[in-house]
Length: 197
Ligand code: E4P
Image 1 (cartoon, rainbow, N blue to C red):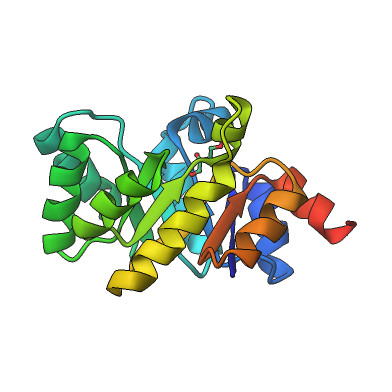
Image 2: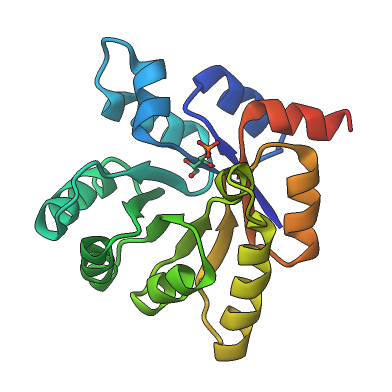
């Protein structure tokens, strides 16, 4: 299972990359804003992409298909290892299909059940990101989404990778690995807890 770090903190990314602990990065606009301060968040993204030898997810903020595609194209121009992160919405699936047709890689985020993951895979997503911690928060069994999605993707031969997101603790990482998630993304605090577990 691949490990992605869910952060835009350049110090943490440098440390984890040097130690060979991570295979990629996921960011979102609030993580980038926290690090960027007065700088352009796109400059921070470019710095991250230069440090990490692997995919770096960068999320669009637009909610309408044409605007998502335009923003996704702009993000993809920042570096070769950018993966455009698109929210799971009807317009998001249209944007996903169009970006994939242009050979961009797309991470469909904010997935909360296995059927949303299947829809994203059918649209051509490179990654789907089910949010397991947020499901656990509302008394659902988040890991069940990963389990179902693994079976469905294997049944039909989808190559879309399952990127388990919204991970809160080491046990989530263990369970994601046991049910066959392709990737787990977690904050630096969870990576440090894995090291000393
Ligand atoms: C990753 O892509 C997500 O942005 C992240 O895992 C969300 O985590 P949270 O539910 O703890 O905010």
